Length: 475
Picture (cartoon, rainbow, N blue to C red):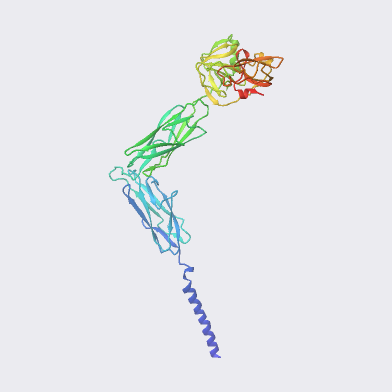
């Protein structure tokens, strides 16, 4: 009996001993004592001169048994890429430092670039976001001091720093400006510098502004020579006489050579203020035509007198200094002091100050108009013609306006006669004259036969003046 009990106790105790040995000796890593702590070794370090480098040490309180990473955030008064760079490099102010299994010590190197040594600048490094097997220790912040020069003289950096001299320039239309970029430091040899530009509100290079040198694919190419303290290019705002509003051109330093670095002022905004001011109280063309009755068909405008309308004439007019303009009330003939600078479809405001009102070839017109281009409000505006009869045409009410007559034909069309000259237009019961001047684009086109519609301006002696063949002569 005693021997059986003794044997049983021995077996139970033996199993217990074997169980304890297996748990403690063969799986010791299943429950580590604590996470590995990460600290900076140095609280403050100092770099005396541009071009120097210094490393900041990071230690782990024990050799890690797994790999991971920790982030290092950069802040302070020094600017990355201008005053300093780092190894490993930073992206968006963050260094991602990899931690290797078994490696306990790491370094981050600060490389000083800046010539701005008259004031001490700081680089603050802060440990953040360690991997799951790690934790932050006590010393999570370290500071690198970029010291001011003891002699007060600027150091010579490894790269030259380029900045726009201005960050914002305000111009009015037609103004020129010399845009300057400053260079701190010097390059060892001639290197390229590229400036990109972009305009707002749909404005176009060459139409609303230009530069010298000219752009190639939206970029200006300059050169920086050794010893240069600045480079420049000229900007010219074109007085387009278009009422389009204020816009901006944005310049940016891009595509730097290895010997150049972009400074804190790498962007420039040039604002071009609209200087074309529309009159608040323009006169209607019907009002202008009424002045002929008031002054017995002859008067002179000695003061500002503004009208707004759309130019309805192209090349089929009496001369290069003639145009017709129409608003919602009426149309009228204009003869400028020199060749016209307005085009078919231009919506413009014109100042008739100094012009004379008179009858010319049986029509009311304004002679010696000095405002050659006016203020352009819009371009390529199509004026819808009024459909009338021959009787309406002969009433005189539509003089100077764009009209349309349907179901008519050219009795003299014979397959060889062209539009140049004056030709009858008929509908069997009545008729009118269509006139085409030699300068018209379609003067050499053969008169069409058959029934058609004719669109034109009611001009000299009440004759119809077509302006664009494809639109004005319709089958």
